[in-house]
Image 1: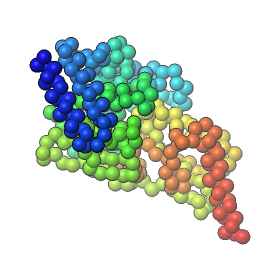
Image 2 (image 1 turned 90 degrees about the horizontal axis):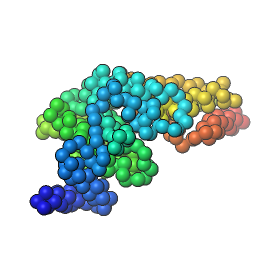
Image 3 (image 1 turned 180 degrees about the vertical axis):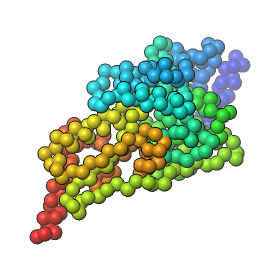
Image 4 (image 1 turned 90 degrees about the vertical axis):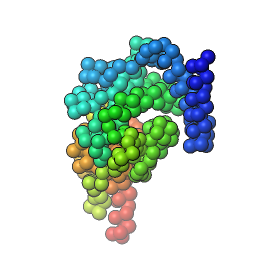
Length: 328
């Protein structure tokens, strides 16, 4: 009874805090799920939450990471590109100090969370002494299903526990989107926004009062604009850390190589797989993957299949029209 009373007291405190912060009940729902998950977890006396248990991220467990070959996120999907690169990239990062957890639902790998020292992390963030929360994901739910956020909350909580003694704080990137690394979700976990570049926010959870606040890297790469030469400059960066990034990279390559107007296209591709890459090719909004058409940021996910080729054609024809009017 005492344990239940203490739990309800903690739930009430957390719920009030989230309502004050967000002015809605969505956060309360996540907190309730998270708190009762922790209660069941503790009552079983071990590393389990409703059948979920975690193990340390190691090179030997990469096949259980959701976004690596055979993982829950990619299994059965027809992705272009060589997604074995996702595991090879993680091996290199583990050698540089990346750590984390892999979560299992009963015996099935479902989730993971990764972090590493800021001095080695392949992100455009300057945060000496801090750790960077890299990727985290609970696979196998619909993007709108709040279950993945509830479970990701548990995973990030473990990262916070693991990093609190060794680092000055934990920094990550939040997105102004409801389900993809959402900013309010991170705020509920103790992060606060310290910088913003368009829809991406730099989120900071300091562990010490004297911890130095992190900063975003300055823009270091200027995408080209060749429209005055009647050419379409495509500058793009991708990363081996994500199977969808590799898939999008392959889609862009295939589309350009087979495009009937490819002689009018000048494409330059980069990889942001190391810290040096992240700083050398830092482009607002300072993510580790980006695409520009003549200097304009483009979301390639908006152009699946043949829509990408159509968009390229439309932009080249628009240049023809503009120059035709100018010459006329």
